[in-house]
Length: 313
Figure 1 (cartoon, helix red, strand yellow):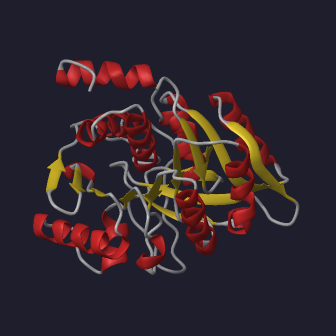
Figure 2 (figure 1 turned 90 degrees about the vertical axis):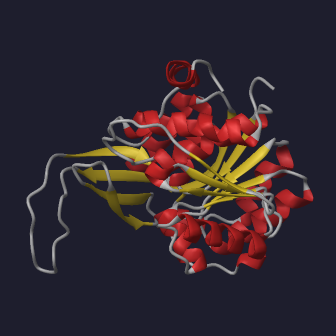
């Protein structure tokens, strides 16, 4: 499969990032930080952009406002080759905005004004699913949860595997997510979902088993930052290490990981090899500043793998 057809359902935000935020202020306190800028983002938009850059035939379902930020999001996605036919321009809500405070190590905290994202409906998703067939559906949690649950059901009816990137961190009734192909939270998200700290190997395994038991996906993949990823299939668990890179900014790294993983699986890669490729894509992403501008191309990932492993996975 040369160009897997990927449907991304999710959030579209403009990111306002501020660098060198090395301390969080108390109420009433001001802290001098570094420079700032704007970048197109949102977990859904980032994944659509990344999947297109990494070799997918990508369609985006989302909602934006009738404002300049929405215009820039559409321009960014169409420039990457994403089909935006099913992105709704909402006249009653602003385009989502994310304030990202990035420290000198590339880690960040984020405040999100959800805006039009929270008006994304199951009918918006159904229009795309009724019009075309897709090899995989990729989704996150920055949209109404009822839309998430209904989308899982619609995809299951059509035999479309669903990859749920379980962010941002929150608690959920996991039984409503049964039928997922992949459930993939990061460390904070896994702890929020399970109540189990994943900072140790034992904790990560316990959390993966809990998620598998409650949601019954084919795979649980915990993103563990510098420790790599933990893959659990209900019978066996394996931690797959990532690549050591000089991290500059972790924004969009998880979204890039998920997009690369989805593309790799649709192209027939074994799950472990697809995770290694996803680590490579995320490793390149964190070594660059910004969100979508830091996402590598398929050729860059292949070159990275040749240099690090002696051959593309």
